[in-house]
Every structure is written in structure tokens, then in C-alpha cells.
Image 1 (cartoon, rainbow, N blue to C red):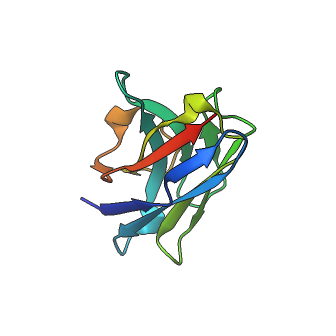
Image 2 (image 1 turned 90 degrees about the horizontal axis):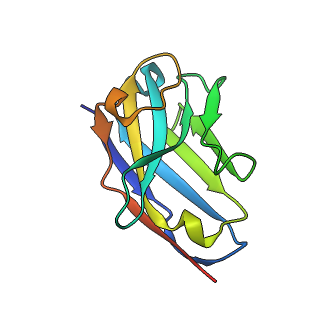
Image 3 (image 1 turned 120 degrees about the horizontal axis):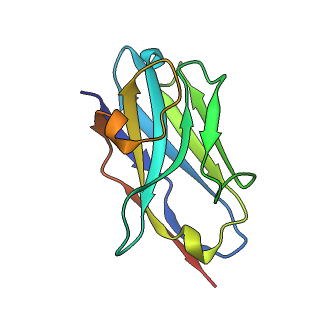
Length: 124
């Protein structure tokens, strides 16, 4: 199990930007595929983005493609989610997750470790 701690959430106006960070407590961070998921009130948890172990492969949900950018710094054991052009539909709790894998993963069932989540609220 990997301990994951998200930060960077908050309240932002529509059209604005936020950068989420997720710090992992493991000596083998480079062996994990990392993912971001989100859950809005009354909805199921949904895939947002994923990045493979060395950052060369990424994937995005269609709803965020072109607006969000995932990246990682293995030297800092941290994965990031840069969110631009935010809209009200992006309001949710955002979760960071880790999967022992070398390829990108879209399903939450493929992730074994989860953070506690950080709230992102976009206002009109």
C-alpha cells in the first residue's frame, strides 16, 4: 500500500485554473502508474487522467481532454494535475490513486491505493 496525500483543491471561478498535487510515500514511486479520479455529489467515481511510470504515456477522459494536463516528478514522488478552463461540471472531490503497473490504467478497480481526496469547487 502507498500512502497518498492530495493538495491544491479549492474554490475557483469558471474559466480559472487549479493545480492539484499528490505526494506518495514510497521508495518505489517510479514503479507505479498514477491516476486521478473525481466524484461529484450523487454520482459515481469517474476516471479523469492517468500517467505511466515514466511519464511517457498519458490518457484523459474526453470531458477534460485539452483542458487538464497530468505530469509526474519521480524524484519528488509527486504527481500533478494542471486544470485549466475549469467549468461548473468539474466540481467534485478529486482523488489520486496508485497502481502497481507500467501502463496507463483507466478503471478504478485497477488501482490499489487511494488518497483521501481534495475538494474542487468551480463557481459561475
